[in-house]
Amino acid sequence: MLISIDPNAGAVYDQIADAITARIATGETVQGERLPAARDLADALGINVHTVLHAYQRLRDDGLVELRRGRGAIVIGAAAVGEVRGAVDEAIRVARSSGLGEAVLVALVRKGYRA
Amino acid sequence: MTRARRIAFCVSGALLALTIAGIALAAVLLQPLDQEVVVHWDIAGQPDRWGPAWTYLVLIAFVGLVLTGIALMFAVFRMRDPEAVVDPEPIALAPGEVVAWTRTAMAAPGFYWAIGIGIAFTVLVCVVVITATSGRGWPMVLLPALMIVVLGLTGGWRVSAGPAGLTVRGLFGFPVMRVRIDDIASVAAVGIHPMRDFGGWGIRGALGRGGRWRTGVIVRAGDAIEVTRRSGRQFVVTVDDAATAAAVLKTYLTP
Image 1 (cartoon, helix red, strand yellow):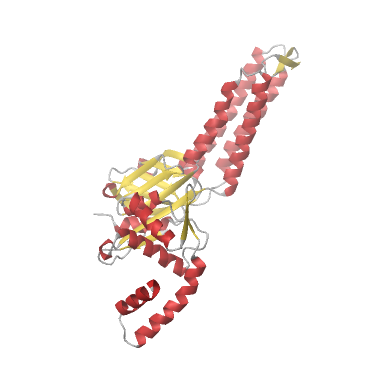
Image 2: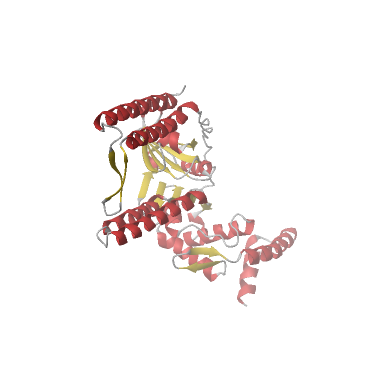
């Protein structure tokens, strides 16, 4: 698994979780696939294993993966991501054509989701 | 004829000579050849079958010729040419971006089936021997136990490449082998033939081109990451998508 993050653009665990979410959205990582062991991703990125575990916990809290002791992190939310992605793409298209910036869209999504 | 085939040819010649010498020696030592000798022992070590002495000559000839034939096969049949060496392009990074790669290296399922059947057979032999010797043969259990441990430690690997360098871990998390990024002089993706390049599978050492020492972590034939250390020694690990891993490492090489 090739992963690309930008440690300056926010918390590293958020970056890892976002990168994996993006992989699920594009279909590079599929339903039922086992994510690399946290130890291995930590080896690859040259970071602490707990940072990767933190990212996996966020993915679990977001309903994207299932964490099982001894079996690692299994992707369970691929279909849901696929569904939502279509709606999000549509929202982005509308925002773009009305000249709204990314931050507006993010703010709307955040506020709407928590309500 | 390649060097490997010449060596195989010489080995087959040596095996043939050894077979003939063995037959001659046995023929002299076992005179007269039609006397009755022990040809089989039971599990407890007591002789239970007798036959003419020339049985041993036939046995030596058979084993010797089979081994000679195997060596000759390596000399006669050309092995496939090595696959092209890929010299990867480093990945273009945005400012602050970090790329990393990780993957599990496994052999073909048939490989594990074959080894599993081998272990099951050994367990069966163990049970038979231990019951036949009413427990005195218990150290036999060490054999399948050792096979399982070796399979677990070297049967598959977790390979990681990134800004820190290359890390290779066994399936249980150990043994761990690392090549730090500032110890790497160059990296490439190469095609590996386990027999030709390393003489087999597992953790291997061999002399590569130009007499350089190569350490290999080999589970199958095909794509492999090859890193050359600053000392000139090489480290090779067979894993799918090796070209991507090599590109990631190349991104972080310092001249």
